[in-house]
Amino acid sequence: MMKPNRHILIVDDSKAILVVMQAILNELNVYNVTLCLDANKALEKVKKSPLLYDAVFTDLNMSNMDGMELIRHLGEMRYPGGIAIISEMDLKVIDLAADLARQNNAHLIGNIAKPVQLNQVNMLLQKLESLMHHTKRPTEPMSEAQLLHAISHNQITPFYHPKVNLANNKVESIEVLARVITDNQNSAILPEHFICVAEDLEYINLITFQLFEKATSDFSQIKSTLKSDLKLAFNLSPSQLEDLSCPDKLALILQLNHLSVDDIILEITEQHALCTAAQLETLNRLRMRGFGISLDDFGIGFTNIHQLKTLPFTEVKIARTLISHIEADPFSQVIVSSLVNIAIQNDLVIVAEGIEREEELNFLSAFKEHVLMQGFLICHPKGKDEFIRWAESWTLMASSRNLSRR
Image (cartoon, rainbow, N blue to C red; front, side):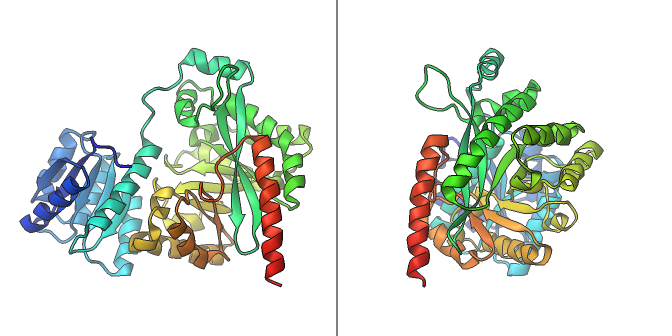
């Protein structure tokens, strides 16, 4: 659902388009709309108040400064909001625009064609909400004392979220997600309330290694229930890659739990650029040891498609921003199609994450030979006991489907 206080900046040298866009946004209950006929003036507005605008919707072909130049400048100033293109474009132009925007550190959320339709704008607003979920901190983070209490009392708890191969109905891997379960709470505290705090206070390794130990201990029971070879996927932040001893620490925990590096995928979020020598050295060393390396949330950060050929990733997860309403979004369709082609050529695994609607799953089923599926539509993240019950049901369902195909 779109938050009512979102502020959108519209940039187009056509007064008619500006009027239409404002009317459509008002119809969608977005009333904080700033209109701008000139990209230079729009850029000045954003520079003056970069946190004021949640998104910039811009035309490409404009006099003075065109839309591509505006996007480049927004990227250079690390504008944190979403950027959408309002223009009729050839599919190759969409692909190139997305790649250039990402190289310039811009968060491109999509493209809509003229004449603009209400359902297209609504789709972009949904993608904006997904982007905001990844890039904005929660309003009520845990305090340092609460976080230390959770760590010291062993309350960091793994929840499990499967990645499913719909071509054979097998669970190929399981993402391990951190939750805090306190003694006096029935519900789990989600990571957006404590991960940023842990990174700021440099407690993130304590959380990761506590999670790692518990999940690797659960792994044999989960693997036995699903009756298949599968992998565990853990999230690492780019800041953890600064620690050159990280590979040794992870390998030691695996050894103590009688697991191999072949059983593990390490997911690195794309929200922050991988750029330091230490990060790249650690990333390379992890891959040299045999860990699978996944680029998480591709599409909201700074890695362009061509870098996937040079960095040692074995898996790429397409962000919810691109999966949302993909059945009606040519921009996202081009990106996913390009990723699938690269995956085939470079032996990469592709995961579509954040699938929440039947329409999204139906569209992505065309790629099921090459794309793993993950999302609430298939399974919500669950604690060990609840996940094992889900796994038992999934195994029975998968067996009946496979028999019906014979």
